[in-house]
Length: 375
Image 1 (cartoon, one colour):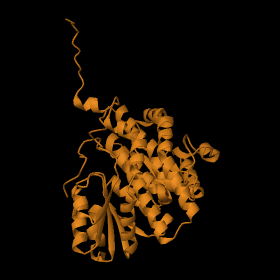
Image 2 (image 1 turned 45 degrees about the vertical axis):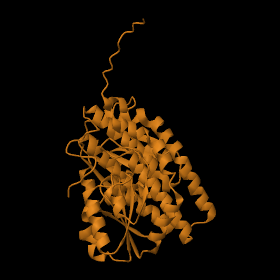
Image 3 (image 1 turned 90 degrees about the vertical axis):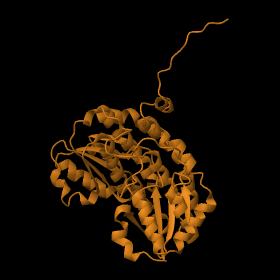
Image 4 (image 1 turned 60 degrees about the vertical axis):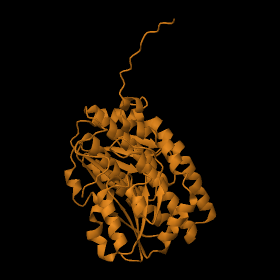
């Protein structure tokens, strides 16, 4: 008879499913290369169905709440730039009041909701149906209410997201917007074949790029969180498509570290908000080498001249930006249409480490729930 010493495991089920990570939020941040691979594996037939229905509409709306709204904001730039399709991004809680009387049989409304159960979104979807609009959806949950309400939908296939703060579901939504816009561009004849091939190649490379950014900047963002954890207020500024990145980076910081922050299209900072700037005020710029770069350089100079501490996410080798910045976070080169996917990653890590350094649980921010089911 063999006698073995009993080993008692003290892990809870929750700890076991974290896969060795301290929190679900960090685990899900690092799952993004894989979740993007899943999101790239959409069934093209359904992508084409949604593209056709959007193309038929006289007016198209992109509707979401919180992080999903920010993906809609980025999506509006993507649809315009790739497919020359104007779309109206709208916060779900304001959609009926702002656009209700404009919705009709010639309208298409694309609802973006991670859970498929967000009360504000479902209320808007029912209203759009009552006005005979075409209801479409992007969601992460098969069988959710939005999949039963929508005429057609796409599953982003991110897998379960336990942390309240959306991370991998946001970047997956952006990947879905890009594939949908590419199908629309082909349908509408707005891109050459070589342009389409380049974008497809760029999409395939995104998981690898995200993996590189995660490994390169994990320790950097932890260091910056330690450095800035006592700051009382942050600005997040971006231009063009990365206005959405500024909003989403700010939301992550607010959600999990309870740090007050303001996000703006950088050009709007001089119309009032710049009055808050004083020596040492931290301003985070999202500044890839894109069509807005020369303009955002001017915004950085304005802030620096007033004593702000400049933290910049910019392309590797951009020496001008590096010299203007107190902290420069180098990012790999890529087409500007992909930058919202990559440039949000360091900001997710920053928010996570800010929460941890403050002794907070980033998985369970106070007063928040994963799916908001009340109006």
